[in-house]
Length: 313
Image (cartoon, rainbow, N blue to C red):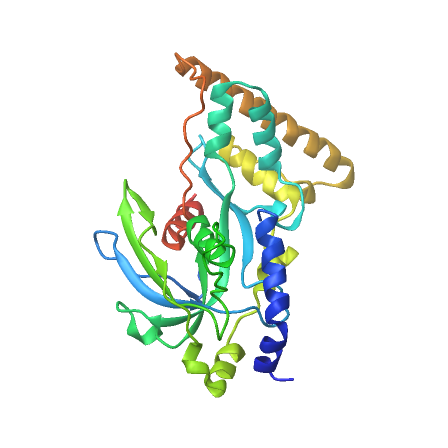
């Protein structure tokens, strides 16, 4: 069975999988990834088409939880969160303790260390004014919650009289007019919108097959190898919040390993407690209502910058 025939057969199944994911609430130095180019004012535009799942993927996207924050030590903590694949995260455990303390200063520390959501999809670049050589190419696209919400709203509209559009569908999907600009120092995609329904390549089967053949397997980003183990993450987390490197269990003998883990846990609690006390001393008045937390978009250029900082430390 050809990829195109498989797409026709699985259109309803794909939507069923997406509906389930939406209802549940539910990089990098890699030249497979595409991002819109912005000018000096932070403005950029392009037209892309989200592509359907293939290569065994169930959804037209994968969802990742990631960390990107700077600790009091000045060191950055930039990592995939293992909760993405159902494994424990030392940062989440620490944040949970801070939040459950009920102290506003503790909560503020937890907010600054919260996970960020990123999605990755296959796209066809239709129009890229800044880089026309990308046009016609299949790329991976990493984006944040605001764009995903636009996709979700089109697939499952809020009002009954709005038409449902499965934007990734080859025959009844829609192009995405991506518009990015800077607002209050943050990038925003609020001017972006989907075009009317259209057949990709006017339904030309040879061109559709060629596009599907070039799609990347999204499941690779959920492979356990993409996530560091618990002890390694805890070591890096402790270093970020304290500036102190504590040997990981893997570097100890079997008799030392349990002591090492105990030391690591104790150091993390001590440092967190000290930082919290310092924060409390600076807080003169605790607000009864927690301040609004700005949902930040994942931005590859920023992550690359952070990674360079991390590499220099």
